[in-house]
Length: 187
Image 1 (cartoon, rainbow, N blue to C red):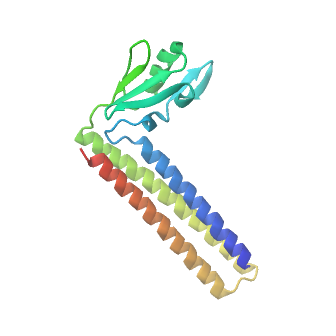
Image 2: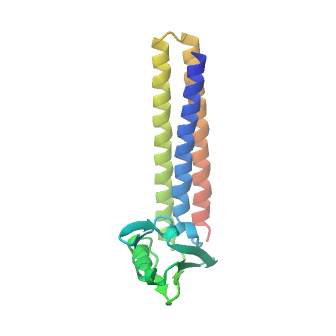
Image 3: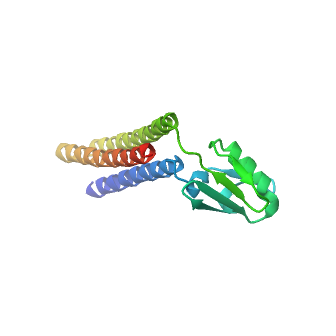
């Protein structure tokens, strides 16, 4: 029974870590006024008839805090990449100079900053929901073990441990959100 509990804890922690990693990836996509190659992670480009991530057809770098440079590996892709960036609905307007795309990242307005904070809060709430769902699954497994003969005391201790782990991960989500919020609202 103890081995099963240990496995439940490990699976629970792994699932929560995945929720946390997903949140980190989503928060990276939310721009905070500074140009970052990660802002273009969601851009897909048509490449020989297949939709391909931008990073697989071009180098993406920042020239300075307000400019992203996209250097395609094949020049004919410039227009397709520009179309992909526009279609990704990121609010960015790529300029084609015949060699590369230059994207000037506009400064954020106060209203846009608030919208980005709302989006970050929404992503954080989704992560918390995922963690709570993981907790429910873990507690259900503990209850199953209880019906198989796990003692009342061990069952109660296990549920308390699961709650402790849940609280720790929710705290990490709140910390990530707070950092991102500060980042977005800093002018």
